[in-house]
Image 1 (cartoon, helix red, strand yellow):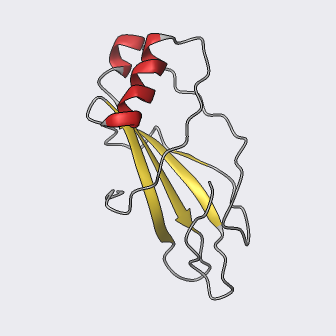
Image 2: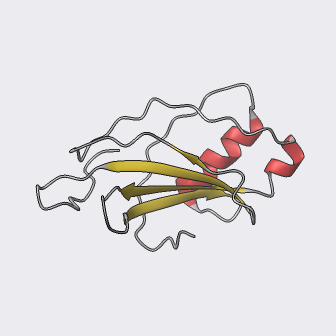
Length: 119
C-alpha cells in the first residue's frame, strides 16, 4: 500500500489487510496479514491460497480491505477493493487476466475505495 490515510494521533496507521472470497456466509475464506506498525506505506509479501475449482472461481469476488489496528477500541476501516465479475475497468481486467492464465502471477495497483462496505 502507498499513501494510506493517517488514522492515529501520531500521524501514522497500524495497517493490516483482510481478504475474503465471496460469497462466503461462514467466513471460512478469511485471510489476514500481519499488522505493520506506524506506517502509511506498508509492504505485505504474503501469499494466500484458495482451494477452489476454476469454474467456481468465475462466480466469486475477491474482497480486499485495509484496516488500522487500534488497541482497546474498534479497528478503523481504511478502504477496500473488490475483484470479480461485477468489477469495472482495471479491476475487471485484472480479474479476467487471472482467470484466463491460472499459472501466472499478476500484480497490479488499485486505488482503495472508502465506499466498500465490509462485513
